Length: 241
Image 1: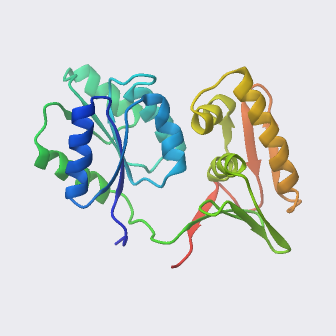
Image 2 (image 1 turned 60 degrees about the horizontal axis):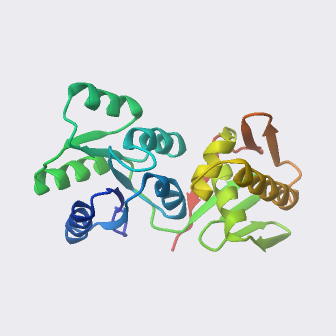
């Protein structure tokens, strides 16, 4: 089993319920991070290493259904549980179609909620306890230290450079939409954020030239795709401690 406690991203805009969930999970042995605005979810998820997302459906910014679709696209294996007072069958079906693994109705029993979270986690493969390393071609990126290494050298990236590269390497071989990158890294999209993204893409292309077999392609009108030998869908591994 993973040596570290499961890390849960809690998204709940009700202050009292959010703190209750945060304390409940911590007392049961989880690590918990609480977010109250739907617009903060993707940047928070990308900056951390989460094992499960517990999402309220009715949220300011972006609702739980939209966030479920985004997180499922970015991390197909991430367990997602929706938490809501909406108990119509249509809502539950819609949540599951968006990619949620379970749907808990408010008010809920604390013990039942904890059992459901544990059950969803058990369906996933055991996690790894070492630091995450992402690879494409001969390039190995270490997100925790923002260092990218290759046989002849290494370089430390800025946090924004590193965040963009992490996303592209996680999705190597697949197209990642501009709007999704902007919302994930900056928390919003728009003209000025898009221009900032272009600056970082230009910087990363220069860095990635360290391996001539790695290409960062622009898919015009859509987004970007990182390609390299033997990457498939963006390999990730964990270094032993």
